[in-house]
Amino acid sequence: MNLSLSDIVPPLRWTAPSQVEPIASDPGLPDAWWQALPIDRACAAVGTAQVASRLADLATACWGHLALGDIMPLLRFTDPVESARTPGSRESVHRMFTGLLEKLLETEPGEQAPVAPERPLPELVDAVFARLDDRQRAIARDRLYAEQRATLDELAQRFSVTRERIRQIERDLRDHVDAWLAGADAAPLTAHLGWLRTRLGSAVPAEDLAAAVPWHRSELATLGIPAWRFIRTLLTGYDQTDGWLIAGGADELREKTRGLFTDGPVPLSDAIKMVSQLGVREDVAERWLAAVPHLRVLEGYVVPWPRSVNDKAEAVLAVAGTPLSPEEIQTRIGEDYSLVGIRNQLTADERFIRLDRNKYGLARWGGEEYLGIREMIAREIQRAGGEASVNTIVSSLTSKYEVSESSVRAYAGGPGFERTQRGWIRVAGAEQSEYQPRRDVSMTRRCFRSRDGRWWHRVDVNAEHLRGSGSPLPTGFAAHLGMAPGGQLTASTAAGEVVISWHNQPTMGSIRPVLAEYNAAEGDHVFLTVSDGGELLTRFLPASPPGLPALNRALHLIGYTAPVASEAEGLRLIGARIGLPDGAGREEVLARLRERGDRDILAFL
Image 1 (cartoon, one colour):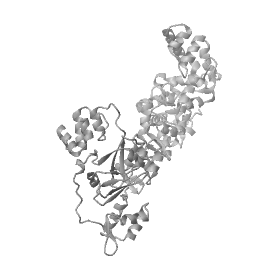
Image 2 (image 1 turned 90 degrees about the vertical axis):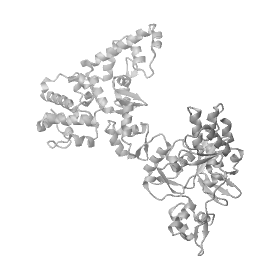
Image 3 (image 1 turned 45 degrees about the vertical axis):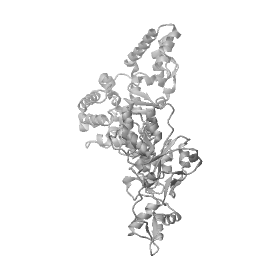
Image 4 (image 1 turned 180 degrees about the vertical axis):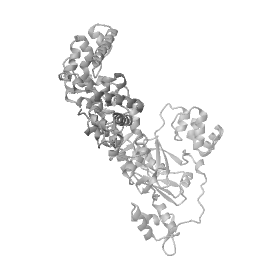
């Protein structure tokens, strides 16, 4: 016998050697014995049971998704029922493989049945339909094997019979093909199907079926369809989904694939080997990974790709391994997320840390957080023991961050810092008491607290905002931002800086670039605040749609757009947003709104 184990076990030919070797190696056999050594010599060296044992280990470890008849096609002839199932317990698989190998070794060449003359498989298939009448062939062509299946009504009308008669002919056709497949005449095609299953693996682009062998694209003379379309119907156990042929359940294989990458980015070369363990051929593995929802091939890595922009930004940074700007992150995500939205999420999510003026990284990397030029100057002064020379501060900050010398000197000479006797600077007014506004932010009109504890101010967009004019801010909100009369705060945005100054009253500079990013119009709303790092955070909310119930319009003005079950729930939400404790009643909410001056909300309640 000159057959090796890989000659009768096709999966050994396409499974990566790195997977086979640790399981199949045996101290009593040479390396790669399953390819190099005839079966009878391998069994003589270590025993038939031992060879079957190695094969059973491979079946359960690597090919659990395949039918036993696909692992060892000879089983389709010796045990057709068992050959249709996937490997179960190792013991039963071992017994089955042992018995088959023993029968194979007992067979003498003289006892083998004569091999029938080779006949092209398309001719073999055509013979199945040659004895059918024109109506049967038309129903087979247009109903059983069509890409766009004709309906029962269409066929019934064409042949002037009932729907039930068409259904009966269709059933008879299926039985006719099944009976032929069970006979000896179909053995060459059955063997081809066994080989084909091992060639396709557990997932393959659907067009690969047509390209698997040249004759798949040839036309069946009796039906006038390409042969691969007939073959496709015989590949039971494969689903065709989104352009892929997938063995077993498509959802199950996708979930198993996603489960390989829950710990983060994996180099593509390693990912391909991991996916091949699920039965996906290595030559199509990259395409499979790109087709699985919530996975993405990104710069040579496979990463989880969930729905939220936060998670996608985390994946982009993890692959990059270096801080990136919001613009770079937006480009690498490559989807329809606004730059303002990405910047806000990077600032608000604790997974990210701002490491430079316009660079963000992952907090788990560590590093010193960039807080804005004014805050960085104060930190340098603190490290120096309370005062430092401007030149020293300039040198330190420009060497660490992408900030200009002129900007550092301008901030160092501005509000918040003062000169010492030797010409250095220190934080100004440390001994002065903090400014106390007449109204706290919780008592300030159009100011609302979000679930994370931040207070936001609602700007109702008007023509002046759209033209680029500045606008006043409530003193309570400005004081909440840490400002005092005579002070100035510069908040950064993707489109530049927005200056908030306090002379006679707090005033915010133009936010026109921010509004343009949102394509805002008069009547829309922008909720804004300033982060600890000096960034202007914004949330855009279009004007409430007409016909919205009064309670929902009131909630819209506090930035809440989800449905509510009752008025009591709506009032509870409003109370929480304006700083009232849980359990505040309706009258307390209305009284606080009156005191704050939120007449627009009161009008809807």
